[in-house]
Image (cartoon, rainbow, N blue to C red; front, side):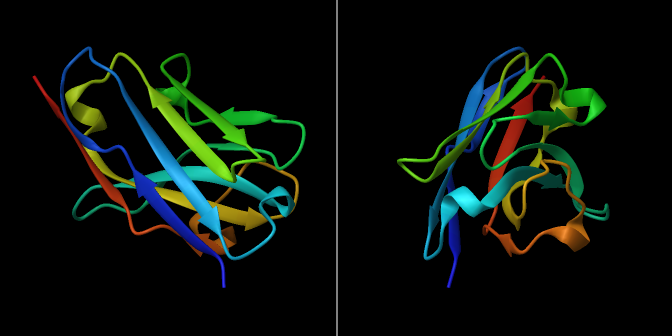
Length: 124
């Protein structure tokens, strides 16, 4: 059974940086596109960005473009979300996601596996 475990969340001041990590286990990492979502109370879970399973093609939600970078290490079976120039509106619970197949674009319905989430809080 595939498991995803996130780490790296925390409290940071506006303008600061955080790197989230996601450890994949229990399956074949290279067969899955990896993605990151976030969710705040009362709102739907929203796609932040994703990375394809082999070619490292990436796609980002508009507010993440230019500030966030997704990467993966297929040998370590890890995915990462580097977040720079953080804003208070980035405050959310961030979820790692895995989807079988090539393409990095995801919706909540297309995700096969979810991590437990990690809180990111950006203070103004």
